[in-house]
Length: 174
Image 1 (cartoon, rainbow, N blue to C red):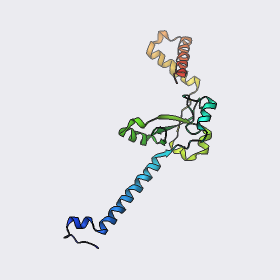
Image 2: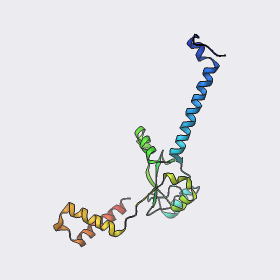
Image 3: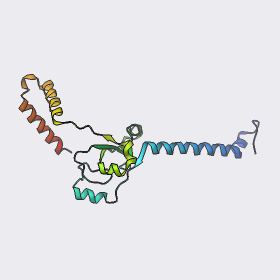
Image 4: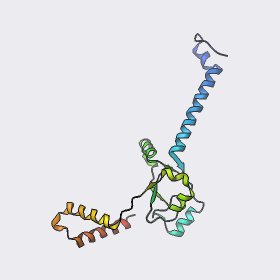
């Protein structure tokens, strides 16, 4: 039953054609949203023994792998976790979600290389951490120290002692 333009508004709203067109539109929008969510966020594939692994490796509060729970002392790969440790998101999606509600952002979490091999679907969400050699960070720290404290205080042993002291402080503050 199709209506021509002369039909009343109430008749048009209740026509089968209007309902079919509207339902098709809603279904199309829902499909688009589901597709976008899949592309931007992925559920964390927790191992069944996650808690046991955290206990066994002593990783509580010490950078556990987001998938298996084992400790990752020097993580090479990190993922952005959101929604109260439920999903992994891209940086773009994290930015969008944080505009709406920043309380769901759980920050960056490590993922172990073994877990990344077992779950290649997580690869698009991974950020590889830059590895800095000791000689590189020492040069950088020495330059920063000189800029901050002046050249006259730039005794190499004193600067390196200060650097190592700060590293220890950072290690204990994790």
